[in-house]
Structures are given as C-alpha cells and as structure tokens.
Image (cartoon, rainbow, N blue to C red; front, side):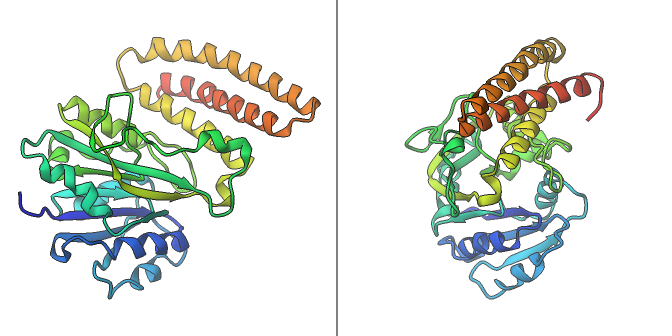
Length: 309
C-alpha cells in the first residue's frame, strides 16, 4: 500500500498554552509532508488559540485553524470529518505531548491491513502530572496498557479519544460522531469515545491497540483537586447512563443500577464521615468522590428514562 494521507484533527477549547505543546509535536512528525495535514478545530475558544496556531505557520506540517461555532466536542469532531482530506483520520486531544514518530506508529496497522479489517486504532495514553500527583487519586490514573504489542483488543477494552484513529471509509459506513454524548464547554460529560468504538465493532471491524503510538496526557494541578475529581466522577456516571440508555434492555438495567447506586451513595457517604472522624482526610475524599459518582447515576437515570438529556 502506498503511503496513505493522514489528517490529524485536534479539537480545542480554551487551552492555548497546552495546545502550543501539542502542535509543537504534531508539526515535527517524521511522516511525509505531502501526506499529512493538521487541523485545529477551535470550538469557540476565547483565549489566544488562533494566534497559537499562527505561530506554526512555517512548520514542516503547518496546522490549519478551523472555527466551529456549534459548541460541543462531537460537533468539533464532526467538523473535522467534514474538513479532513486524509485517508486516515487521527483524533487527538489538545493537551497531549507526542514523539516525532507518533503519526507513523498510528498509521502502521492500517498500512499493513490489506484486507481492510481494522476500523479503529487506539494509541497508548500515559497521564503525566507536571505539578505533582496527590496520593489519594493515584490509583485512578494509569496508562491504558491493553497489550505490549500492536494488535486487536477485546470488547471490554476501548481506546481513548485523546489518541485514536479511523480509516475514512468507516465513517462512510457508520456515520459521524453522535451528538450530545461528549463535552460541551466546561462540562465533563462524555461518552462519545465508547459509543463510536462500539459502532465500529458492530459494523464488523476490528479495534486495535498500538502501544508504540504513545502520547503523554497532561494533567495540571487543576485536574488533581477534590473539586475536579468529584465533578469528573459525577459527569462520567451521567455519561455512562446516557450511553447505556440508547441500547437494548436499557430500562431494566438502569432501574437496577438506580437502586444499587442509591445504596452506594449512602454507604460511601457514611464511610467518608467515619474517615473524617478518625482524621483520614485522603480516604474521606476518595469515599466522597465515589459517593458523588453514584449521585451522577441517580441524577441521570430518571432523566434518561423519561427522555431528558
């Protein structure tokens, strides 16, 4: 197979400083210049995003700035689909750091796939903490590490949207990203990553993991606070409910989860209070985050069952 054209699609919202680091890596890829384009889909950023993109106008792989006014990650991703000219579409977060062989490593499984069986390739995502990692949240942050070599992964494993790629022809078959399942503005609501990967599998394609296509996912101090952890837990739970609500047998499953999470919310709240009493603040915070996750289920389940967002 000849060298396929790759489009890197970076959706961004108000992260100009982090975006600069991502573009610095994307602009220096060891992939043929005539076979790589870099798109920055600006989802109504109010910071210096356009000027950051302009800084790389003379780079080997100069990015193109595209403004998408419909707020939401899925709208930005779908705008990337519409703008892209590549055979392989590589979606990346705006806060990753990449090596110069990143695109080549992500494209390699597709290039070797003469039968067209692969519908998605996910690269490794390694969280890094430039401002330090508090011990109480350490267990929640680790690399994906699905397998040590490139190859297919089972249905229980799903790549992260921070670093995954698809052949364009897959979208011709399954359609674009689903609206309403991903982050909008400052919201941490998500779910689009898992939903699109499930549709890829349902269409008969394999999903692969490429550990050599590693990115460093930056987690600044603002993402290691109790407030952020609790908010992320709440919105992640809501995302899972909204995603599950669209699948067969949702009503019975969600009703069972409602009562399970009611008990969890009460239990973890009591556990948090006990840990505060015995002066174990880190354990108390972990219990409260888990209680708040259950509250996310309790909030979203009736809304999804009765047709609300």
